[in-house]
Image (cartoon, rainbow, N blue to C red; front, side, top):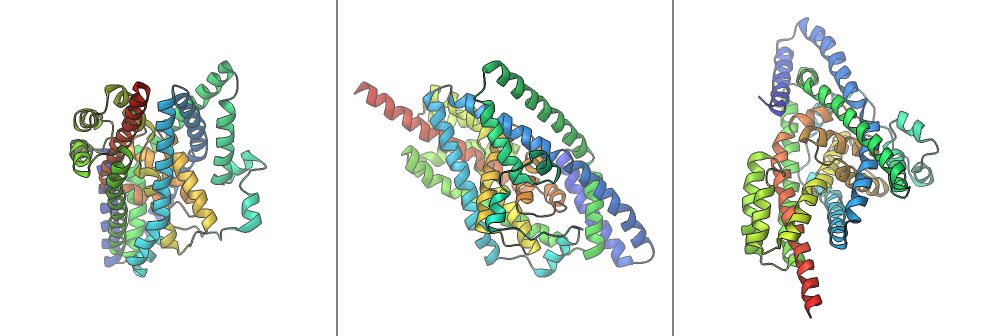
Length: 414
């Protein structure tokens, strides 16, 4: 059984066991809660302990990698620019659309209270105005990291990452190598913690079930449906985008993307879908081998179209549960962080990607992280839709860049 399925099984078993013991009552319930509470809290702390240095290292190495890609040629730089623009559009779409979806179909008050019951932390009131702006640039980056202030830390990481790209090559290679090694080591720690995730998730789910019964299961189902609705909207918007950007018919693009979408849905892996994407772009859309060989590997590495939008939606769902209404400044910041962390978390497994990209956005919005492990447990279901949207976006971007390359070739011949 895969780790993902074991975590999902632990979630369902924990909720069921907690609900059963709650219905039976007696002296065993407070004893079991007394064991599960510190156990779940200890595992959650272990998961949180590496997130701040990991995000910093990933942003720095991600910026260095993007700089290297952009320097390899004009077409690669333009492709990368298109990907950044579309990732930003993905997050902006979620910021605009997801609150409307939640307003049309809100989680019930009892279900929201059920999920909130797992969190022991208070939601801080977000600062605004001049105080908020002054907090963007950290006076002391080390203090910001110690306090878990994600926005100032990301700002410093971005500035540091761009500064690294401007120093002499030897020093740059040493620094990038150091942060890459640092990220690799921290990912090993996160992997170790996730290996015992069924224990931590079971403890948290048991607490949830013992306090609220089966009400939490309905809230998690609502969460999954909300994400799938958002991703369906994203996926549908790719088709007219491809028609406009690549100047191909809707039917032709749909036929070219379909084989890769089938592989993506069955494997939940963009990398496994790469051969089908190559075939669809070359044979179905007539994109040259030189363009597909350049753009598709780049897209699989740094371009997950659904990631910024869906990760922001996950945080907005948490804000909805806690009754928090993010300000426009917070939303703009969350969009920026969502894009940066999405591009920085290249080639990470699904569970690592979810936690390293979702956590910074939750911290930007000032939300407790206690709910994230429960959402991580059900991530396997919406991840199917995520991967389908991602490969559809990869094909659309490649087709668009292929059209640019074709236009340039015709211009040179003329």
